[in-house]
Image 1 (cartoon, helix red, strand yellow):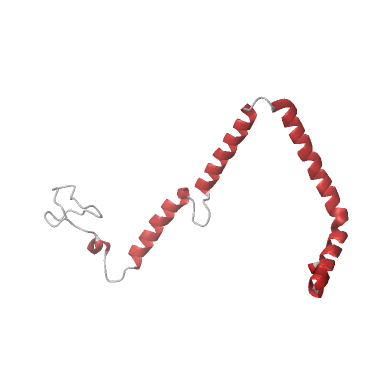
Image 2 (cartoon, helix red, strand yellow; image 1 turned 30 degrees about the vertical axis):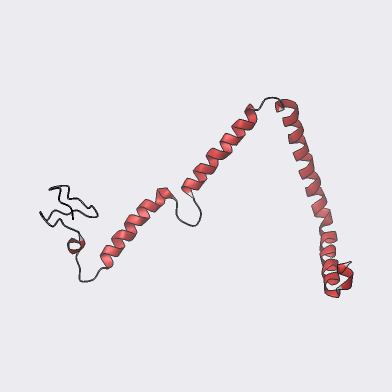
Length: 131
């Protein structure tokens, strides 16, 4: 066997074995408890809901709805959509404040024909000219 050929692997296997032997009084009751409750739940589901799929469909729908709610509020590395709109506005305002020598009025795009502020729009809402 490969563990007996390489001495380092044999020593490593012995150490892992000793750790598992030391933790056996803790791990065996936990494993027995897990086996017992999973067996009881599957037996209960099999006895009461084996022909009726309604409970399984309800559980599936509840899990999907909770998953969608959690992903909307906390989608991972970026802030949630509820909070990100306010953060984006704050960052945008901070960027405008940090501009030196320029006022906010100088950075607003204006229509070439009438001078109306148009922002990011391509067509002026007042006169209808393309910019």
